[in-house]
Image (cartoon, rainbow, N blue to C red; front, side, top):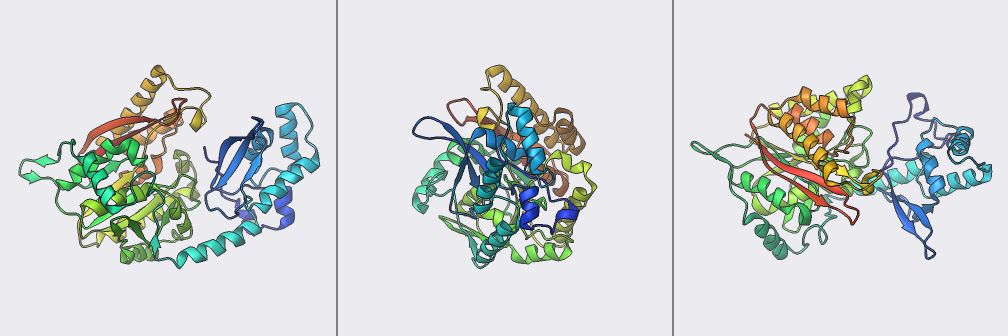
Length: 423
């Protein structure tokens, strides 16, 4: 579970003074909690920062962790203390809350001037680096090129080549692939890339990945190449610049998010090993279905989608979209109150297949209605990239190739994922 904060209200955007930050504390985006225990078995909550603005990792008690949901920049310290009293039926001394605020501040976990300056420093350093370095090599897949080749080829051995048309290979306009650890979802990855291998060459892969920690501008571009053990997947910088020139919003402002996100990286591992003479457009997406109830957010969304469409309308070459997504995330690890049992997992699969059916016929209205009706009880992390896919790809016939699940821990926390092609 990731702690995500709403954007700063318009009248507070530039008000990052220490006094305001102390009175109306706001937690930064990209803070992920995890459970930890000391030598006595006492449980604490650790706070992991996506951007690692501080080398210090902070651990707090579970009752104080509860308060972080009120660190939204709009709730005063008095209101936070009142919420504590209501929840735990005991008084929270002012100095204890102040100590928490000061610890968060020193660790650069608050959305204030200190963190903003540190983030800017890190962003400027990252901009100087020409390539995005792999973060999953050696864990999700081998970091040695020879070992990687054997690893990927073994995955592909028993997967049928399903992309057969009447007169030979059918051009593939888009695919859906997982972004789960390749060791867990290898079969499903292989279905997607076996089909792509059987199709005509592609000049540009538009990879729609997921920004798991939130993106204020909904989308984050980068012009960096993506290094893999086989070399670099080359980003089409001309296309990136063309899109940026057409936009009213700065979709490079949050480029740093690419540094640690894995969803695009895992696709480039397959692409770089099996394909030649191609380029990529790496896009991270992050928003919920509630976006379409906010006119300002809709403007940002349309700005990006329209700019990409316009830039690609004059692109000379073949284009294939890749939605790098997983579907349901259920179980205690993902914030559910109990372990998922077979009956619950059957409901999960039913919901997934409704989404997949809507994708197959490119029914954008039904896809959105499923989320609106259910309020996403199964934590589908691919929503944003799949929504963008539906709005970007041309008309095509969808085909489900594989649907699979992976158990993540000993509490039966489960992730679902699939492979699809559109031709």
